[in-house]
Amino acid sequence: MITIKERVFGSKESCNAIALAHQGNVVTYKELLQRISFISSLIKDKLCSEGDNVIIYLPNCIFFVSAFFGILDAGAVAVLVDTNLKAELIDIFNDLNPRLILTDELGYKKIIQTCNNAHKDYNILTENELVDFRYFGNLSLNPTEITDRPKKPIKKLATIMYTSGSEGRPKGVWNTHQTLINALDNYVSTVHLNSQDRLLSVTPFFHSYAFGSNMLAGLSVGATLFLQTHFQPRTILEIIERDSITIFHGVPYMYDLMVQQFETNSYDLRSIRMLISAGARIRHETLLSFYDKTGCVVHQEYGSTETGTIAINLSDNVKNNCMSVGKPLNNVTIRIIHDAVGETEGTILVKSSGRAGGYYNGACFDAEWYETGDIGYMDDEGYLIITGRKKRMINVGGLKVNPVHVEDVIKGIKGVRDVIVQPFSHLDFGEGVEAVIMKEIGVELTQEDILAHCRQHLALYKLPRRIIWEDEMNISALGKVKTRK
Image (cartoon, rainbow, N blue to C red; front, side):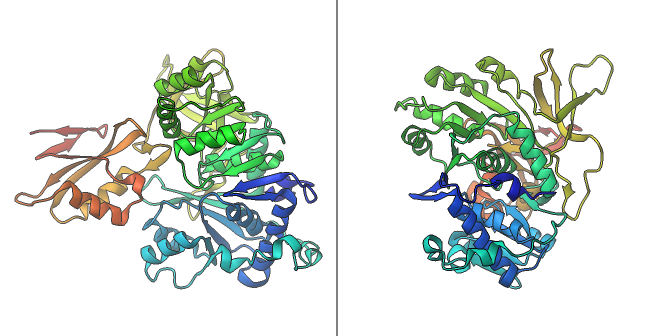
């Protein structure tokens, strides 16, 4: 049995092709593997033991990639945490009891400010504290000393990926080395990347989409990843043009904002051979406008943290990509369960060799088929069309927001009698968070009062973007708000 590191890097120890580029720094595959070995050695010798949980609380950067594979190489478990999470970190710490947290200066300050004394028993290390990068270049450590040590057996868990969760608190989804390898093989055997590709990596690696489809897939074929910490549409389009990017993995709101850029500026996107969108349904208007202005088709991809990538639309027909998220990946099977005979639409179930193992400290995914919670159907050509969702989750630009969690936060404000949180159509994000609030009689509350409280307890993307005040309200059996003046 091989590790995901061995599957991704193979025999690249002497490869001088560029693996990563970030903020003017470039790292070859050979140099990246040296960094990984160095971090692995430090973790094994000084910082934690085999099987310990090590949190990565970082944006896309060279250190993220080095730390991820270094943790696994040391036999520890790499825990990927959304850097937008704030108070939710306490739940994650309580779940994991992590031995070590790897972050940057901004992440360190956020942990200290958010968690107060909850972090006191953990080692929180930034890049400069963990690794003196003067070692790289003339590598004063003896590489033989690091790489020739006997390998420890692969532990059951390789990674835990924390997202916003669907029950009011973050959930950790765990994978083994083998499930990661299976998911990677499913993807690269379907979506043919190659060593000449230049991938722009701005969608965060702590989300399963970019982690698997961009980071693991790109490195596994020997491509170059151009890492970006923040999304700014003009900057991204300039990088595509300047650096001859061939593959871009984005989320819907990114394409919405790039389309707006085309109104005032022109960009040469001839180097692009594939644009991919996932995380949420992309608007038809965006797909058609992007194609009209650039001649480039944006291909829809569909998956989840629990399942890995399920399907991708590789058709060059833009209208087909408007309608469908595509066909299942190799080694992935989709099944539609209908509630009644004769129905076209039904609940989408998935069987995949690359499915995750379960929730950390929660249920294992033991059943042969996994229920996605989405509703849709397969057309006559085998394309999957998604028509709705069974769950009440709000999807803000590919990031999931649990309305119950937001409601609980707002109910903690003195003077709020009741609140319902629901989605509304948002121009930039597809869906925005709307809060319908009923105040206690005689209480004065403003929109800024609500937002100020929410900013203390919620990630920015979870903040209500629209607040409606109502005197009386109730909820239908379908979870829709009925208001009465």
